[in-house]
Image (cartoon, rainbow, N blue to C red; front, side):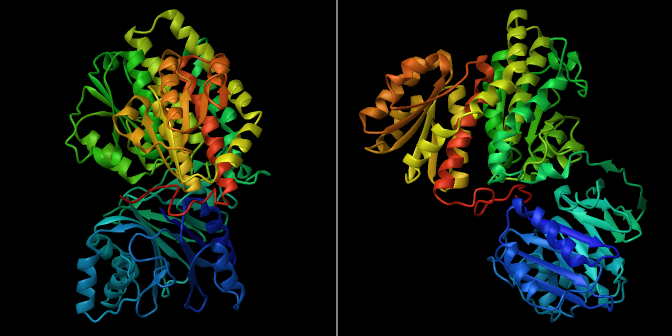
Length: 612
């Protein structure tokens, strides 16, 4: 969940590390630090609690760090409170080894007790410091630094992405990876590591992705990679093909607003290449018609907003394919002894492709014989590499912690997949198929129409930003859509909100509705519009303030019921949530803006969740 960047070359390392860390701020963090190795072999460390600006100021108040090799880190606390001491990098007791670490060392207590009995003194409360101290222990016992690294990796359990500096090797640093993302960057006379390509895109587009158990030695002249047995590996190189400007705000106040506005084009990039001659085409899939026809069940496995995509997908895929679909939280899936096997398809959804809970669930499903089809945005990510099939959303980099365009592209891609498989099964009439394809082609323009006027969202936010509790209600697709709307609000505005299937209100929750309670009522699913109206009447009778979302065709009817009405264009029912989510994103954004929140970097949250 943290960010790592490392550099070795002929230029001063500190400015490059700080620039890289700045581009990793979106991942979420509560402290930051850098370590630079001087030409004389002295480790220079600066780290502190708080934003990167605090670290920059501290560095400006002291003599410049010298040296052309260094590692940097932004930390999201898991073990030990956020403070200066628990910040990374961590340094061994003799000051000769410094490390940065993402992940969790599961057996750190055992290792710490072992080292304490050897007389080692610890400074921090973190699990990560044991790596630095254990490296020193093996290093001073006579091993060279690479021997020490391999001994440490053999001893520790858990997940890690590691950057390691050793004062005895001032022209290089070492990286290692297991169950946490880490990539290698190949520059002209320099080398990099990073948690995310955004950290180094200004310097190189030539990258490769480390696999579990690999160790890399980086110098300015190149990168050598070794497997668990220290055998050399030739890594496959990838060219990053998006522009630097895609990871910059481009004049918008926040990345989140920019990414909301980018959704029509992102969806167009997802949809257009997969529509050919009026047909949905997935040339990248290996799924055979025989396999699809033999499916007994589909599992959709995801976390957070991707889980909400799966909830919508369950309704649509079951309607189209007439096959049971089960949506599972990835964090629960592998502990539930799931009934999954060769005749079940596991659809794994992750924006980053590095979500650790989702990765663990993927491996459990694979172990039980299921075919793994992943929907991810990041090319070459861990989940993509371990899947049997992968569908990329091609949404471009998403920087704001609260997802918008990644959600929208996942959703439309899952709908297209359902239509594709339903056609193979012969369960969608030709006229229905043609209508959905036509609606897919028109979807980006209709999304643009929703985004063309934001004043109504700004106005409603000004009226309701001071509420402490908000309820989202809806039925069928609208219920699943409300889950995402509620999450967006709580993520960035810190307002407590919950989403309920509207029919469940009378079974307990309606007791919480009182005068002035804000209820966001979703009524975009045409077959259940009248039911949605009944639920609005119920909450109004108990004093609720209602903001209703419906389609243009139902505007007149809804305005007779609800005091505040937002509308979206009509489209095919299965695609209606792709339009309906945009008002919910904008409503959350403008409420957070009114409340003065840090919209792109909400407290306690991280973009890529790489710990369980």
